[in-house]
Length: 172
Image: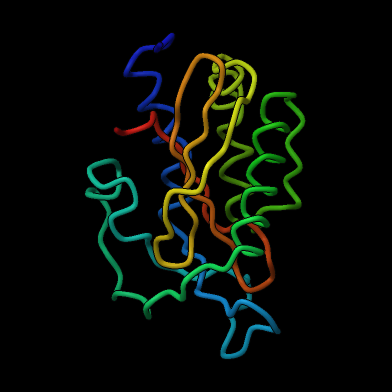
């Protein structure tokens, strides 16, 4: 049951695609601190290859492929789901907490929240979230609302801030 146009759906996906595709959450071990070099901003400059293939990703140049991602463990998936639920609730309430995002992603979401938040509000109440996959350290979820089914990608940086966030209408 789709209550918004394809243009609105693509607009919503595109609005969050730019910041999400500009960053990538590095693979993190299931437990313990992150090791290895870090960047000053805490965000890796790369793309999420094949993230929602065919969207804005095809228009962006691809960086060198990242190291293979580790398989997510149940606690990592639970953390990602909890963060996604909080972000969706905040967007539906019109009270986004920008401190949970990397500074770059927060700036881009802040600039586009006036269009994205009302779109997510139109989806109606959140009904369920289920984990579908993991791509390059980011988790893919199917999020069902009362009036719309969507697919979301959420990923974190080494400081546990949301570094990637993207959604689109669910693909069956």
